[in-house]
Length: 121
Image (cartoon, rainbow, N blue to C red; front, side):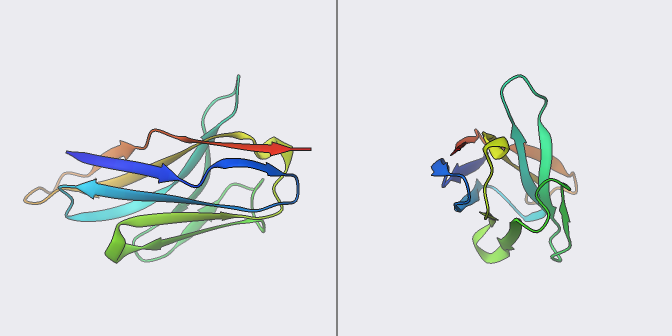
């Protein structure tokens, strides 16, 4: 079994900062691309940022310059540093990972359970 567990969400005032963490546990060989998505009430889930195993990053235009994604491969953990938060960043943030399990070449996709981020004006 594989689990992705997020932490670090909460309530913050506009202009503030939060750091989200997501740790993968279980029977994992390698994690390829991993990242963060978010879903606001009444809206579709959208990409926030992704990072490859080699460190190449991709950001949504709405968060460029404010959010930074990073990862620690030894800890199977991905981080999202969120600065200059805006009320429109309010959403449930989900961790996502493409990974391979031991003795398998299949690339499997997993989601975390989500963590709420609320930015007050």
